[in-house]
Length: 196
Image (cartoon, rainbow, N blue to C red; front, side, top):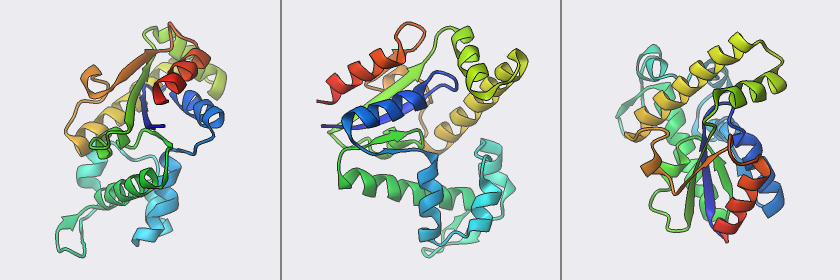
């Protein structure tokens, strides 16, 4: 079985697909929470993690926090330290056995793994995304649209900055699944077949 990475548009159902796939395949699923669990192991305090939570935009990553000296004397910002801690964690977890990674640039971190299935989940119909978000977050149409724009920009900036690749570009993935056409359950069935 392959390790699976899932990148997704906000409101496309990607996180739900990853969780359902994990349950059906009996393999662990890791998302942004893995960063928080592992950061302390790399010498980053809980205070810094709490301050950084939710601030993964490009602007924040490249300038808001003051750089600190690392062991190799290269100057790294706190967001960079968090990314490198996450990168090492993703590599270690992938070596432990098949698993699923949601976001966190795992598709690029593990790009040299020949047992990797890189997936992008999107919804071509904006109304589908809005409905999903309104159902899960109990917010208005305008709030849902604002949240989609913000979250997609945040994910794009983070991915582009740390990988040098374009987030959501078809060529970066092995398969792109449209949840405006396929149900979440159909996506899971397809991915299970591809992972075998």
